[in-house]
Amino acid sequence: MRRDSSETKRKILTVCVRLFLEQGYKNTTVSQIVDEAGVARGSYLNLFPTKDRILLELTETMFGGQFGVARSIADSKLPPVYAYAVETAIQMTLTELNENLREIYIEAYTQKEASEFIFRETAKELYQIFGPYQPELTARDFYDMEIGSASIMRGYMAHPCDEELTLEKKLRLFLTMSLRAYNVPKEETEQAIRFVEGLDIRTISEQVMQALFRALAMRFEFSLAGITLPAQK
Image 1 (cartoon, rainbow, N blue to C red):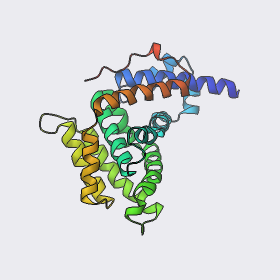
Image 2: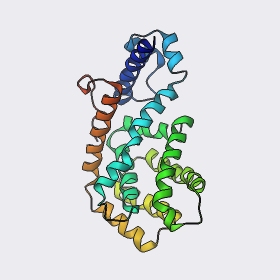
Image 3: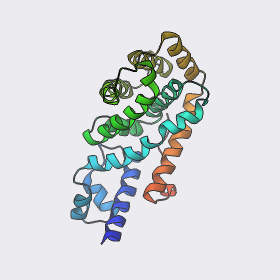
Image 4: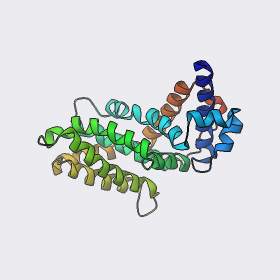
């Protein structure tokens, strides 16, 4: 029975990854998922009482390794704040590459379980990175602050770039506000922002996007060959 349940879950998640990437999270219905996965509706509901539970599964995979990727880009000899600047810049740039991917990220920052996972995991990183700037704060304080900085992140993700609000301007605004909130000195904030501006952040984000898709494929045991990857803008 466990093997049957595991196989049913794999079928459902495989279909969901494809549908979410190809047509969007909101446009994907439970009926579509059940029909294309070839599973009984009752089996689906036993595993995923709501579509938000599927989003949580995807969020855990997508967000799990992003700080590691950022650290590999920001030289280990540089202050940890650079890794934060790179990681958040990658997230925001990913949402500019494809509208369906934008929707997945926005939903992840909105839905209760997925956003709680993001707040909790990110707060751990924030405590390590920004603790030295505000030694009087506790791990719980950084969790509470992450709720605010994540809201700013979501707001910028939800607003597509245009001629006035370019990606470069968006990243600078977000990093200026967030690093100020974490008490990073003005000069160091500017250095971190300039480091990000010196990167080919679009190319890096495209590479991260491909890595995320591969991670999803490995976790849910499906082949990318059957999925039409989102067209980039």
